[in-house]
Length: 335
Image 1 (cartoon, rainbow, N blue to C red):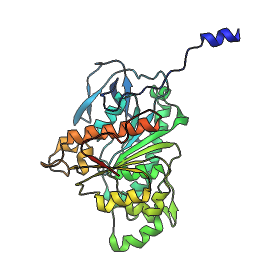
Image 2 (image 1 turned 90 degrees about the vertical axis):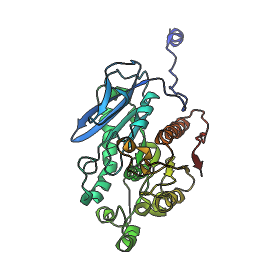
Image 3 (image 1 turned 180 degrees about the horizontal axis):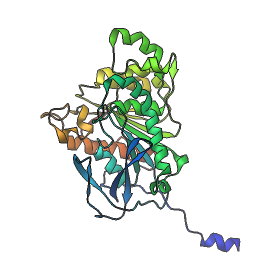
Image 4 (image 1 turned 45 degrees about the vertical axis):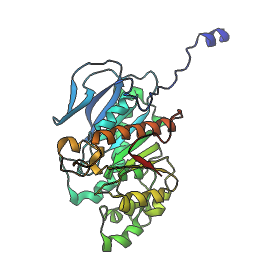
């Protein structure tokens, strides 16, 4: 009887993986939800193409995600949490979050309270810096508890974390970078800095805001070199691909990206040539007067297509699939 039962058992499903350069096998579907005062956007893969209408994000912009479509998840899906930038919004990098869903990933992004397009309060920036990693953790927990998407999540499998700018700081903190409060206390009085004041909230020494459930990290043009310092960055053990933009005027290669790369030691750095700070967001769809959007920069569509390729290849590699690494993105240099 045991032999017969084994013979009739269904074979285990192979994890799904699309070629990183492809459009993906699925229709991305998105929805909004609010959990304990936290606004969230989710994206999931669906096999039901064309259901509903294109989703209009806050009445501002549409991508390719639909409003309807049952989640495809014959097995638990890999999860990505996305963290937006300063004065950003949960859907600010929909080119990436929608593409991840089209490739079979389950994605969730929180609005960081007091730091969005609609409620920014720069006076609360240090408090926001402390709260941001917790919002990422809460977003993952909300996804696990959600109906119906929670059925597509293995809580023990954790998540990959991706973030832009201030979200890049959040990504590094989640991945294990320690806040060097003593170092900030030395440099902030004379030099100032975007995150100064954070050291007063987390206390002396090194502060840990990480989440052990994170298994990969992609900080896109992050801020945080001063906040973490070399010692704080050296504490990161999660695989990281750091993304910088050659002509970034907000988190420049010299002041932020290269010091962060040096602190992370052996992790990969992808520098997008001719790109600016907002090349990795929808900002250029809303205005041409932002760094990365003006004439002379690498076209945003190209930067974003190549970002998708880098992210999908990296996550695929970390999940054990055979991928070309580094991928052959035409306007990227690697270190």
